[in-house]
Length: 208
Image: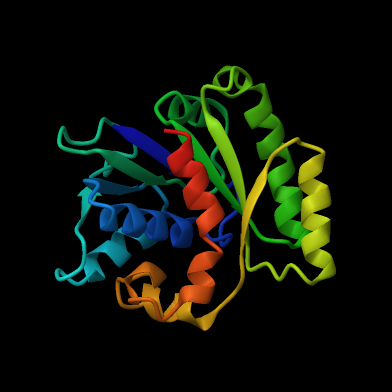
């Protein structure tokens, strides 16, 4: 059983979008997927309630107590959507329970500044220093042709963290999330957008 955590100290950076898309993709790969939501807004859980029963099943990982518990025994892969402001002992505890961390970051000055202390804290945690936990950065709402995209790359270089993928903004995401689906449920009609996820998916699969 593997557990992936989606984390960033700032709200509105795309954590839930990443979490539900990863859950959807792995569910389509015949994994027994559980999705847990610790964020106050409960966006992932609400999305899961809207998910059509005809689509590959994603199970609810009940974390109502606010603590990370072991997923049910039949779970082969768990996705954890974490709250904004995660740091200190709660962060260390969660890192001891997960295999991989995906950090979505938007290429705005405010998002990058808010992420700086988080990246520094990650680097100091023993599990990360010993490379027991893999970390990948995903640029959200990124147009690689813009100056802000280059600024994001330069910002991440100071922390020696890999920017594995960049996801461009698209109205398709809003439409999908509103119906409990993801772009992976669109039967190939969002091929261009789906290609942007491939480096992240390859990274997660290759580091089993």
